[in-house]
Length: 182
Image (spheres, rainbow, N blue to C red):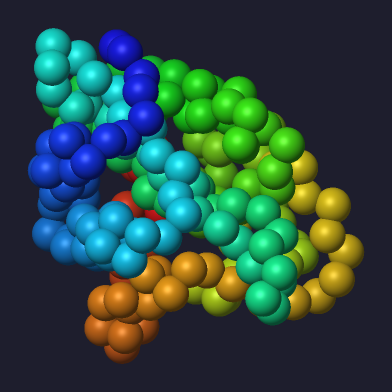
């Protein structure tokens, strides 16, 4: 697998991958499309195998009020037929070594068993607005000691109202055990 920065020429292929990796959900595709449409600062890479995008990872800014306090890892996706082969792990290791990422505090809402292998630890501060009790909220290089709710880019709120009505726990249960949690 070759890993490279996502370019506009690959947007359609990345969107198709996200649709396949998150069946029954349009949230992830819409999130990434809105990042691009709104020119939001996002650090993105794709894994390519035989000219096909088979993996995707993105990092957007995290906020304490209006100040940037780190990055959010979301989403991480692997094409279904390539899952359970270490591709998501390889892409995540690559991303964590990049200059723009390696010095930042990184937050992720995901499967603790997967992310702990990369040095992520349960995050008690700050609080995640999408996870009551922070049970699936992890961080790496987090030295924050103040109690606040971490902010996300506005694009994360798109389509979220319907998810909140249905309950985020139901959405989370749908994703349980998958490597590409948001």
